Each structure stands twice: as structure tokens, then as C-alpha cells.
Length: 193
Image (cartoon, rainbow, N blue to C red; front, side):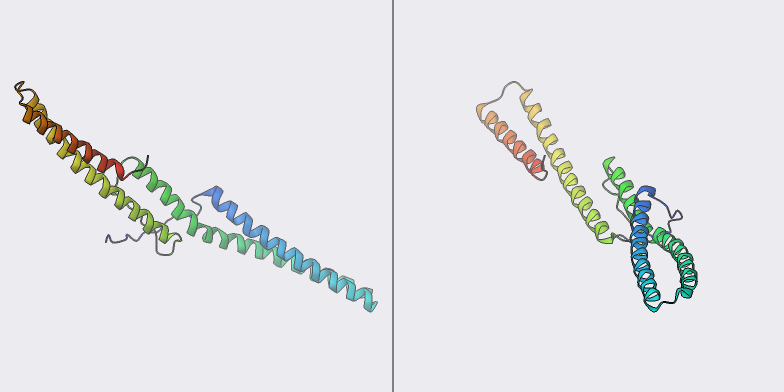
């Protein structure tokens, strides 16, 4: 098995659209929870103040509210920064897979994906590399069969060019052509088109 290369990605924002979409979802979820809980606390405390008939507590409630808004802003910044690094654990491997697909599409069946140890999608890496290995093996087998077919066709061509072909030789050539057809079908049967 190939040894994995250890490397560090230096760019944290590698797939902007994907990462910012992820960050937006996390921040929106956090803000919704914060405002829901905040509104519930604010409403409950406000009702308690009204029920206790202590209007002098409203300024204290407003100070607490301002403090909570300040804390929410700080938490949003912290969540934003953490979301960048967490999203990078997905975006980096996706970027790597896109580049690997481009490389394999050019015909390089020796290429393999190597993700960092902390990245997500390591199982996909293994499946992708297994898939490329199987395709590479099938192409090598097809190449070997093609070389064999080419040798047989050269031999048949030489026999046909002799012009004096006996019926038994024609029968033998026919059998060889059938074998060639079967070999081609073996190659083609490994792929769905």
C-alpha cells in the first residue's frame, strides 16, 4: 500500500462559496437560538417585573440586555472563526477531489488522492483510490488483450496476403477472428456504456 504524504494546506478559505454557505448556516442557526432564548428570558423577566410592580428594575434589565447583546456579538465572531476552520476540514478534501478528478480525466490512472490526517472524507478517499485502481487494472488488461489482438491480426493479414489460401487455412483464420471478437467482448463487458 502506498504511504500517505504528510502536508499542510496553507490557505484556509479554499472553496469560498461552500465554506461561506456553511458558515452562514451555522451563524444563522446560532442567531436564531440566541434570539429565541434571549426573547424568552427578556419576556419572562419583563413579566416578572410587571407582576412584582417594580418599574425601577427596568433600567437594570436594559443594562443586562445590552451586556447580552455585546456577548452575542463576541460569540458570533468566535463562531465565525471556528466555522472557517471546521468548514476547511470539508472544503479542502472536496477541492483535492476536484483536482484529482481533473487529473484522472486526463488519463493518469496512477494518480491517487492523499488527504491530511485530520480531514474529513477519508473513507471517500479510500473508495476513490480503490475505484481508480480497479479502472487502472481493467485498462491494463484491455491493453494486453489489444496487443494480443494486434499480433493475431498481423499474422492473419500476412496469411491473407499470400493469396493461395486453402479452405483449412480460411477456417483457421475464421476461428482466429472469432477469438478476436470474443477478446474484444471481454474488454467491453467490464464497462457499461
